[in-house]
Image 1 (cartoon, one colour):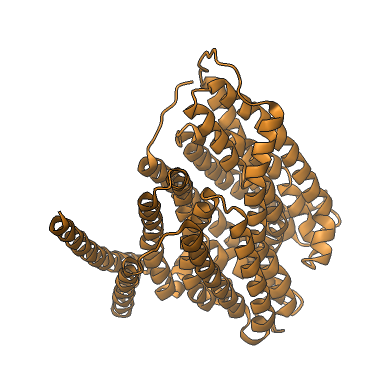
Image 2: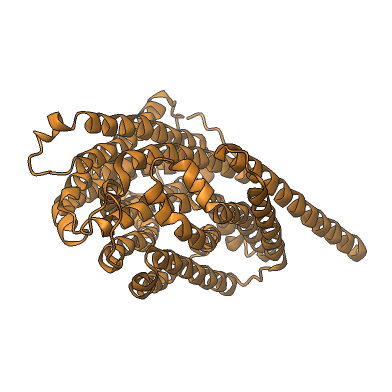
Length: 532
């Protein structure tokens, strides 16, 4: 087939831009959806995701990496027929896994909603998202095949297609249900809250978006031309299945553990939040209101940047694996520093800006949901250090997998999950939802420290701390500038104040980071010249 290969930097940039576009589209979906559903309605939506995401993570997360690895190996040997066989075998295998996952979500929809979320009307939302597990598996195989051929465009475009369909279909159907509630509720007599139906309609948009990605990949496959090859297949179907499962399973289990934090938040926030009342929210609905606000607003913003820096791990995995196989410690060190430094440079100013301007950001994004936003202002501030730790941890996980330590991230995530559960259990009754945010930050801080220690020990490399201290210093200057600007600006327009503050703070950050980086480069050159 016609393959457009990209190097590491270009491929990572393509994936990061597509992930950023997908997250922007996700925000354009979540923000109006939160306006329509409110805190209680978002609790139905978030309940569906809480069951869906662990099943989806187990079935889908490791698929693209496993397929990419086998495809890349086949392509390197010039065995394109074997690469095609990997693709066909993976489609058959993981379509079965995805179908089983969809059935599990569908069967557990009602008991999960009743016994775990104390919200039986959320069962319809859970059922609506069930088919997305199957569609996600199919898409992951196709993405992995093209990634293995160093062609990141199909993955990037399919992510954007998925985002567009989610926005268009999800918001349209949710709005339609809200406007025609009396007519539609006649078909669902067991549901008394129209927001439960509207949340299910919004969730159906997510399922349709995953179907849209599958259809895009089908078009890609039909329009591709396969090369005629004469070499014999070098692997049997059984060998391919064994390789795929061996590569995908540890990653899938680690991803399940990662997504357990969402389940922990659902269980503990709803059950441990101190009793209170709010205008327009009954005492019975108050825990679900707080959970829906926290999950739908604070955690949505929290996950924006990590989902972008996660793309750095895809490129880091390939380079780290190559350096490890060649026992090239210098390349291993340089690749690790590049990936972690890039993640820090992106994450730190984003976290500082969101932390300093959390009230203004939430007020701008959710102008019609002031009560929900008010619940999340302090929580968002507390979450930001954890966001930086998570952004840097993602590339570390990929590099640990690349050096043959795929089980280590799983053990680290299990430890982090235990910390998260204990933190939520003891802190939420004292601090409310801010306690859930603090336990998240403590959890990801511990995960980062354990990941750094594990990688340096197993890889046998030493990572310098000075570049990261410079990033933190630059971020602090950025935050101080942003705070001063926000105190001085009173234009009357929240958008203008935010834009000016972000531009000035960002300019200060870039100026300082460029200055300290330039000095480091000059110093390194001087040392090199002196040695020579």
